Length: 181
Ligand code: 5GP
Ligand code: MG
Image (cartoon, rainbow, N blue to C red):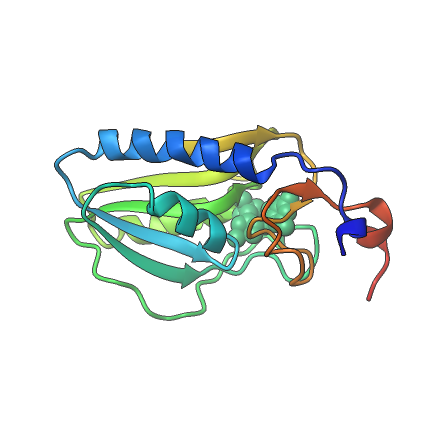
């Protein structure tokens, strides 16, 4: 399996160091307030787990699913929230945690949905942001790392359900991307 991936773009130590900085920033920005975190599954699972244990604020964690990729490496263009369940967000400071800002469709749709619930504030936090034009206008409040427009896996990010558990972020070798299995 490790033969499928290129050398890490960000190794475990680098990721954890950056998470420490991001958590310190979030803790300072929300000083004296309580956070409601919405972590987008499955991609943000590892990121949220490692980030949030470094945040020293009163905090509620909710996980939700957003589906915009369907097993491929290209966004489908629509975003669905298949859970049907939404936590109470009225008057809360909401922080959305997602793995990556790519087309922007997911964060855009989520932010709009959350604003309908009358929160006190909405901010967004992603581990990775691709340097490319967005399909829709959306910005992330907190960004771990900027990357080129390339397909990456690991640390929560998958290719057809695989590689999410890798403790680092890497590109997939071209043969893997083009071989269907
Ligand atoms: P969006 O295009 O809506 O900004 O991102 C949608 C979702 O596509 C992300 O949350 C992530 O799950 C997936 N995605 C986008 N770029 C990549 C990538 O480079 N690698 C992987 N594994 N997933 C990606
Ligand atoms: Mg995702």
